[in-house]
Length: 286
Image (tube, rainbow, N blue to C red):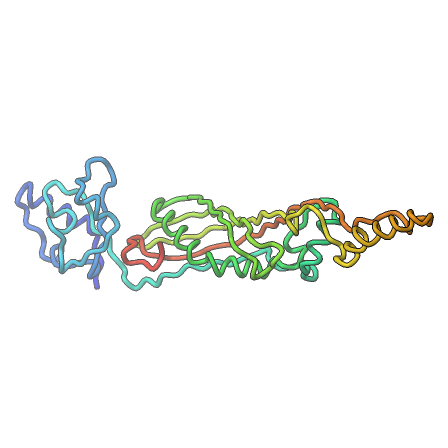
């Protein structure tokens, strides 16, 4: 199919209205594609009904009310060829997720609470970053793609940024981490052509959490049996020994100790590339 500049048809139509100049047959009947993308001048002079059509796809065989771009009186809109063979996709790749030591058990998290002197740890240091990121992406990947798609449509051409964060339940992955805050920022760019947006950019993710009182009582019970003995049986035994003139069996050990909360954090990155329709009504994203 022969392609022509849709501006040529508009100008020919204007000349017909103003001077009665006939529109050449080949200009009137040759169309670049079966469909077109409605384009306005995107300024304050665009009539509201035409502004609503900006970026929408129409068929040459089924004109909207008032006709095709440039056909209504005073219309400055144009028809941009629409290439319908577009395949939408949005792909996210992650970096900086691998690495770390052996996975910590719940006891390791508790031990660090009492013996780590408040030193913060990274999630990869606990050996759980890959599992947490995998669960996080399972919960949010489609939402992240939709969010980026919406922001890309707002910008249409040029650079843009967007932030995101929320609390996510990770108890089923790492019980000691539980509910944790994960967020980040997307920085990218969009380029629109023929009603299709090309989007690319990068993510910076972060996780922020704190391991506080593991028992919610401010103390650790080292050993239940030992605690009962030290706090009940030993005081009673020493009291009876004192009544009979015998020395006590030794100082009382309470069997408890306090701990120090510590931060659990980490960061990783990712990239996104995609292609999607500018018109959200035709798109699987947004």
